[in-house]
Image (cartoon, protein in one colour):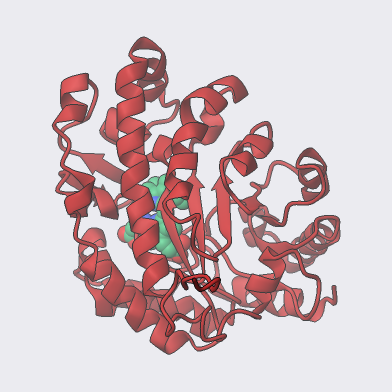
Length: 359
Ligand code: CP3
C-alpha cells in the first residue's frame, strides 16, 4: 500500500507546480517573516479604476461576472496597475445564487436584490439543489486569470452563510439585519436549513475557484458584526465552519473577514480559518492578543484615510505595519473595501510604501 498522499490539487495548479507557493502572500499566511511584505486591497477591482469603468460600460454587474474573459480582465487590472501581491477574483458573493437559479440582481449603488425573499420553511425547501449548480463560467474565468498571473497568487472568495442569508431573508441590503436576526430565534430550524444551504453553495463556489487555480481563499462575513458574540457562535459560526469544511482538505490558506467583529475574532478563527482579517476598528496588536498571538492577520488600514493628506495616511500605514508586526504573519490590506471614489494613485503609493518597509 502506498503511503503517498493523493494530491488534492491538480499538478498544473500554481501551488502544486510552485509558481505561487513562496510568494509574499503565501509566506505571510503561513506565518513567515521573510522577504518583502504582502499587500492587496479588498475591492481593488472596481469603480476606483477608470479601466474598470471602461470595461464594464454597458455590461451588467452579474453578466460581467459570468463572462470569463471580462471577469479575468477585471481581476488582472489592479494587479497590473498597483503591483499588489494578490489578485482577488472578480465576482460577487451572490453570483453562486444566480448560478443556482435564484432570481437575484445587483443594483448599482445599492447592492444585491432578490425578487422573492426567503423567509419560511417552505421558501427554504423550495430552494434549488446545490449539487446541480454549474460553475463552468467560474472555473473558466479562474483558469484564464491564473494563466496571466504568473507568480502572483489569486485569492478565491465566497460570502459567509450569515451574510448571504441576510440578503436572502431581507430581499436586499439592510442596515440592522432585523429579518435574519428575528428568524434565527423565531424559527431556528428554518434558519439552520437556510444557512446550511448557503454554506454548501458558498463552499462549492470556493472549491470551484481553488481547484481551477486560486492559491488562497477568503470567506466574507461582512455583516457578522450585527450579531452579539453569543448569537454569532450559535447561529452563524456553525454554518461558516460548514462552508470552510468544503475546502479543508485542500492545502490552501483560509482567510475569514467581517466588519464590526472585534468581539468575534476567536470564534471566526475557530470556524476553520487559518488567518483572520481584521476591520479598521481594532488595532492589529490587540487583535493578535485576542487571538492568542499565533494567528496570521490581514488588515487594517482605515479606508476613510485614503482620502486624507498623504502624510496623515503614511503615518497611519506605518502604524498598521508596526502593530501588525506583533502577529506571526501579516497581510497588509484595508479594514474594509476600497471606496468607489478613491484616487487609485493613492493605492499604488501605499503598495510602494509597504514594499519599502523591511519586516
Ligand atoms: O476587487 C474585489 O474585491 C473583487 C470582487 C468583489 C465584488 N464584491 C465586486 C463588486 C468582492 C470580493 C465582492 C464581495 C461582496 N459583495 C461583499 C463582501 C465584501 C464587502 O464589501 O463587505 C458583499 C457584502 C457584496 C454584496 C454587494 N455587491 C454589495 C454590497 C455591492 C455594492 C453595491 C454598490 O453598487 O455600491 C455589490 C456590487 C459589487 N460587487 C460591485 C463590485 C465591483 C459594484 C458594482 C459596480 O461596479 O457597478
